[in-house]
Image (cartoon, rainbow, N blue to C red; front, side, top):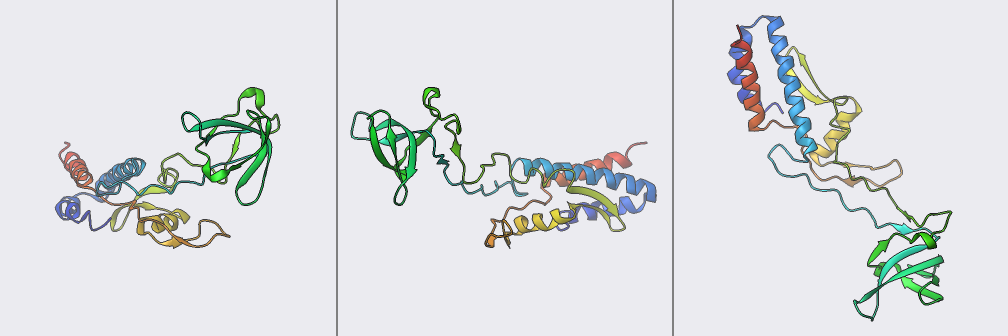
Length: 224
């Protein structure tokens, strides 16, 4: 973020040098906190410093029904081109075929998992009490914004040192953030294969950030 803030540093350098160490530290801390807050809001909005949206997550694999009752829309040759199927006590056959008792036809039928149009809730009267007719996810679908925890005040912090103020990630979070910020390769789990993550720039000062920092500085030195 240093390059983006070069203009602020150039304009503010002389002003800061004329402040006492205590006053300089006070305004730098205020500027750092404000900049960190701006970074969090932008990350929460899922946008890079240049305003472009983050590349979205890849869609999770579709849910697999449990072995209890299940309900879905399936292609048919009748009116509308599909019908609702309610199956009980089905099993997996060859490949991705589901075989079980089709309540509507009153017979054992097989259905191709990949042809299912849409999974539906199982009607209460047909639910299996042990499963509740729920879908079992191969992996949970996280609907929250990406980096929500990473960008929290616990990990994205601001501070002041001998060089001035800084805003960045701390501890292990800094390594995780760098992988996403730079689009590097990493293992999603200990046993998983390394993958390359899309580049999603997490830190960077925008023109609005620079204006905000200058406004804070000028307001501070202009206060009697």
